Image 1 (tube, chains in turn green, red, cyan, blue):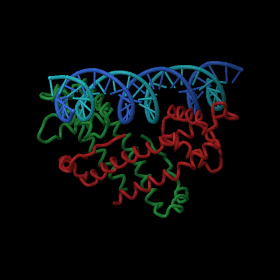
Image 2: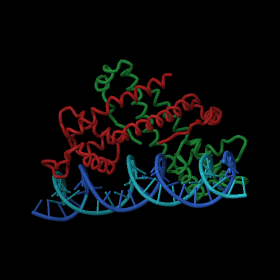
Image 3: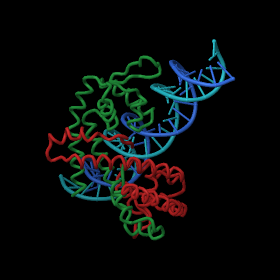
Image 4: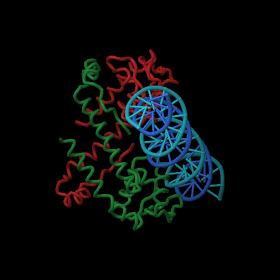
Length: 147
Length: 147
DNA sequence: CCAAGATAGTTAGCATGGTAACCGTATGGA
DNA sequence: TCCATACGGTTACCATGCTAACTATCTTGG
């Protein structure tokens, strides 16, 4: 992602909002600032994850598998649903996680269409390795937002 | 982009923040919510732009050229700098805008390394066509955020 | 009971972000 | 002056998002 360094000017937004009474210049500007903040944060997170041979999506996939309370595995579709990405992206992500030895993918018992995806011990270790840095970055970002 | 439908739970974040006193669960959670909101908004914007044969980046490129106060053209590097994307992405974006007839790219006079990029009349029309919808979406998003 | 449809997953191909490495043009100091 | 360096732009290639269309496995209704 990305976003303009210099946001659309207040004057430019004003030109729109005067013609649309329900719109408010300040809140539109706040939304643009949010987009800019989010885009910088994503860059920072992606670069952090890259240092750990992960990406944001691979990390989040580990998270959703790990945090499932009653089970130790999920199907690919369940993971796609929780991550809110398309199934093809999920397939690719799981293949790369499996190649890195962070998850185990097995044929589901019962319905032969499903696959069971579970964390390996390495996967759990990787999560433990990365979580502190992840929350530290989020915590910094919160602090900056308030500054 | 994308982001978890179900954010990391308060309990999970707590587990980190108790070990790191400077971190605060509420602000970390607020940052995660911001990421989720930004990701949904980006999807909405990209789909809006696609309806107009644009993308977010192509649209923003038109904006930064148009809003330059004293000049009617920018160099590719200046555009890259303002958009905050890499120069190769800028090259590709400008090529597709030129192919669509929305910008004109000419060799710069003087320093032969530069190119001058200017909006065509079609480019200005396209901006005028798209801006109201753009701000309407941002305005909606602001409203939702406050709801 | 089995053909038609639904569902899980994959493959193929496109768009758009990135970095590394290249060319051509300027520029500046030995 | 002219070679080394810097700079603008491009090319080549990789990562990661998407949709469309495919295969394989259930499920269901005539």
